[in-house]
Image 1 (tube, rainbow, N blue to C red):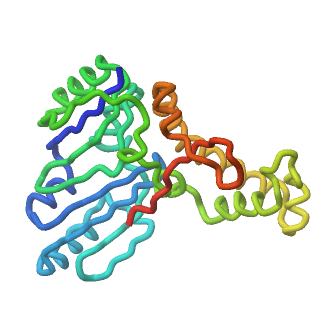
Image 2 (tube, one colour; image 1 turned 180 degrees about the vertical axis):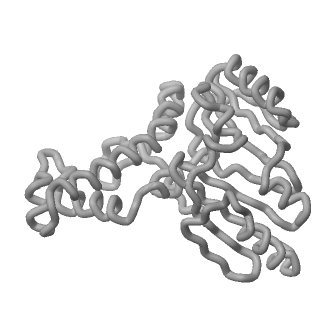
Length: 255
């Protein structure tokens, strides 16, 4: 039986320590196993420059890109640290548990929402956390009967944050040329010729983009697949072009 668990955890972490010392600070973290997107909100404007000084001095941050309003909001992109550091994602590993991003950090605690497919995997996860000296509290544990559109949306961040500009350009170009029509209106060679780019380069960017999008979709497809037939039918919506039912995921930009 699927069930939903919300964990409140405390352990040695740069961001957990930061929110202990600056309690007006909240941190939201998304990860796609390649990059981390970290959003920092500082409600007290007097603490903002102090928080920024701490973040920019952190030797393990390795910022690839950053943006700030210089008052209360700071966003950065770093290489993924999930499997290199003491994180919930690393401890989950290959267990049948889906971590729902963002992970939220406030007042020295991290909050993680998990969809658990097997109870023994949750027990194993908690055992791992104890072995690593984590302190945890289970705030919520309830049955979860599959994909609930109102509570679990598939965000644009989750799907596309790992794509490079060239990979996004490749998949959009392929779509414009009818590459995904059935039957196809153009193959890779034809598109490359019209765009005046090497075929191998275009194909490499296109395949990498497709692989990343499918990898991001699979956990959600797995979750939807566990829904009962009645639940699946309830999630169908009418197509705009016909009376035939279709399935639609909610895409929401989280900013």
